[in-house]
Length: 423
Image 1 (cartoon, rainbow, N blue to C red):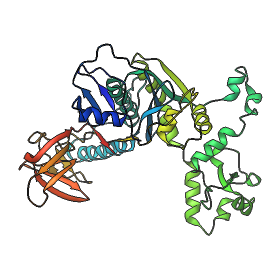
Image 2 (image 1 turned 135 degrees about the horizontal axis):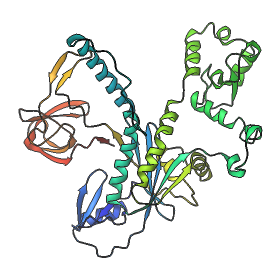
Image 3 (image 1 turned 90 degrees about the vertical axis):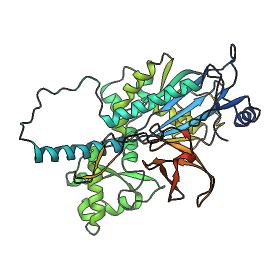
Image 4 (image 1 turned 30 degrees about the vertical axis):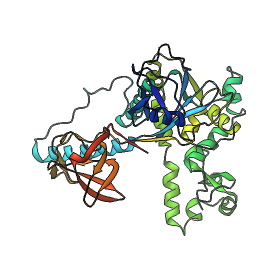
């Protein structure tokens, strides 16, 4: 079943989300109209005095590439969920491209200026634009959901768990290092780093063993950069041979193993950098904010035998007594941004390629979702798509991987461009 439908009254007061069948009845009877397409929201044509609403818990599982969001009732019913795809890497690539263009222009057109570094200081709490984007995008959607749903509390996955510190807060030193979690963090780290597959043959879904890339008998250490995962067959075959000797006939595999051994967990680092900034922003909404751990989330998901998904992880955040996935077809959102403000578009070498006109054009901007009612001609019919308006009065669409050109006078706006792509 799809997500429940958001419902507000004529004063924009959020009411209880309704079942999709109930939403269709309200539309068919004329008691409600479509207020917003994404997320789908209805508005009643009257005011509800003293509405009887039940508070929902907004649960968030922040991630580097995807963030899961779920609305859960007090009975544990997941009635609405979404997956938000971030564009952190796109921001990083765009900044690097702009840096290269500006550097080339300065080298060509300006005098030499000595570099200055001593007078530049970043403020406390500064985050890189690609990381700040993850926090601000999540904040945007929390604000939107607050307008359309009666949210009473927020839960966020914040940190990993440590059972030793929970059981005995005074534990330190060797007792802590050799306790019940000895080797657990290392194994989990390696599973993430090597994509849960053998480093040498790439086999998956088999028991994996911790393997020293450079054997200890030949000077290797127990550092995490010298460890990988191998299946039992590859581990026995390699023995105490050096990795260069073991893979001397496979140079591509050797280069990949050596390169990946030095790589860090980039996604984990980005989440750790932004989690507290997101937590502080959530507290500013004035709602009770609780935190959960990654261990709790995984424990709840396994306990209720649920599949792995970002929105399901969000529903399992914190203390969960019972859970029921009422909504199974979720809302998928991809952050795309509003595009650049650069009027003169350049090629990869920095030379002018084309000039963009001022927006909007005849009331439409590139990326607006519109409905086209074409009365005649080759493309006669009705369809909904994103438009790229042109100054000569036509708009381009991409439908079935084919470009279509239609008059702008046939278009009706459905959802204005807001920096997101919806599925």
